[in-house]
Length: 151
Length: 412
Image (cartoon, rainbow over all chains, first blue to last red; front, top):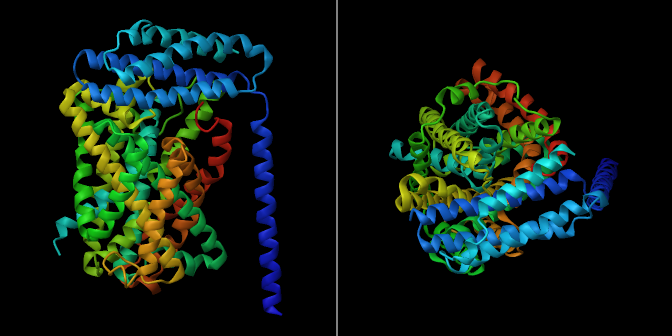
């Protein structure tokens, strides 16, 4: 009798857990498919802005010879992966149509940033990578980020 | 046994909790976003982890009972099993992030491919934990982690706003401009508290006390180890928050990579600073990886009643030894899948707060039980601290996941 009650209780608990998990997964899938608003776009822009600022700092320290060339290359390589992740997020975002012009504005800056970090990951003192200074990219992205914050 | 050497158990435990890769980005991030406003959470969390690790260490010394055995005894099989699954999921994810962090650091130093370095890190951890006795693991990684002190020196050299820093040590209303910032402030507070009071620190510390063969005569040592180890961890945490506020914030950088943190050291001490910071980070991440892998194996063995301990030969504790090897292999597989190690640990830290009340309640119940602990039971002060933190952690546990969702995973 006791064993039966225990089994029944265990079955109820397992069922409750399974229902909770299913509801959680369904909610997650539903949220993931909602159109992204200004907040989601701002988060990606902020991450790209931070990466541009970091590349600028890396260049500054490389110029002062505070860091060695290998560190610059390898850190840029890791940064390049992070930039790619944000660019992917930017492209895969199902955006509210009113935000499409902002995405179009971010795209070329993100592409410039990606090129700059990739070039630096190959050659720590790449002149080509510095053609468009990263601090200027960071400033442009900051302006977009601020405009999204006001939305 | 040399009592001074016991300090390294506290230092290693604290390093694994305070400056592992997730905590590193959290503390730097809290400085970038809120300056010194969240320093009081570090103080709150440090006193909490000191209180509970002291209790767990005392129980280990008096009763020779590790935490998970208490959890099973006091919470019952069902709740204990749930705690075991959740705690070991956190251990696995944290271990994965640390293995990834070590590979990222090695890549910066050697220039070798990341994936090859992940395999090298796996081999390194298995060899080190297999070959080194527990006391040497404590000493090597505890001592190596002390290189992180470079971040304290760097902050000192940068001449921070001492008055603002001191004001941040006391709880205050957040100075924020929008409801979004307020939510982020609350999320970072909960995440910081959770990351300082990570459950694996207590599991590892109590099991370490038993590995080190503590007896009731080590109760004073336990207190000193807890105070010194965690105070050092807290100091490093404060320094990292300060670097976030002083160095990264004004430059618009939100650090997400271990190499970014090292840049703060190179700006002051050039290549030497960079090297020392990278080495310190390596020992901190490696210590955390070992701590989480061993903690997962301790939990499983203590829950199941298997023989356990690094002091035993692998043959005598075969399932325990196999468990930590499996954790390292699974952790490497997680990062091999291409996920970002920092994001992995951020999620694991937030979800670990849910486990905290289940972990700490049994510790408190046994530590205050005069029948079980005799003259070594909690005094009134330890009881007040214990209940205060249990209530605080329960509130944090309830708030953690809603805040995580409302702040888009803590990104704003």
